[in-house]
Figure (cartoon, rainbow, N blue to C red):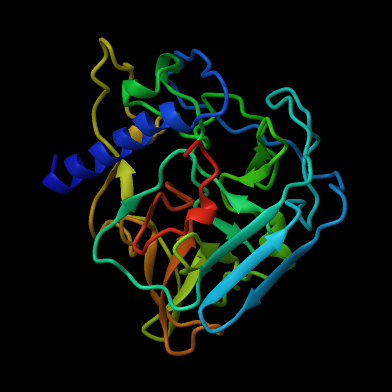
Length: 295
């Protein structure tokens, strides 16, 4: 394993340990070690009135809303998720002109990665760990299917406080925004550090291309003992390793692209078909307004 892989694996482990201080509920015991197909709840329910606004000035972009999406959702509560969607107070801000730091900051539990234009946040990390222990270093992949989380067809579900949030590509939203595989993705939202979020397609060197992540499954089997056994199959976030050049995106699922909103080009994050789907780190400095865990 490369030095980069070891460092990045350690970063994910630290993110899991941080959950001890930020989690808002008791962790459940899990011993599942095998990935299962996702059983998404059909999005057939009108969640109510969406109220969202995006306002920009010379220094700040502010996204406000009530946390209610502007598309159909699954039935909540459901068998895998006992919570009901409730209105939230969404008031998030990012810099108008974000800057990269030259280093990567891992997304930690208790932080939203970003927010969509409809005011619903991206919160890809699940507070589910091997044997219910955040210190185990093994966190369950929310899209791995091993743990039933009651995700709907937008790859979203509801937290105990009623917060509806995305773990994957919000299919209902990108359809409303007119996403097409033949064009650069429409703007989906903003990451906590201010860089834009797009979905699946971008323009690189003047061509529309599929944006592909640079993570792959590790080979072989997990260590067992005090850690899970079984082959690396995507059940856990730690089943994956970053391999530079494996795709066309960096560690944070980002790349330089040219879009309608940024005709001179910008660094941007991309939601992808494959892991990690929603980015798990920042190239800039995330704003404290995206932190929802205990401080």
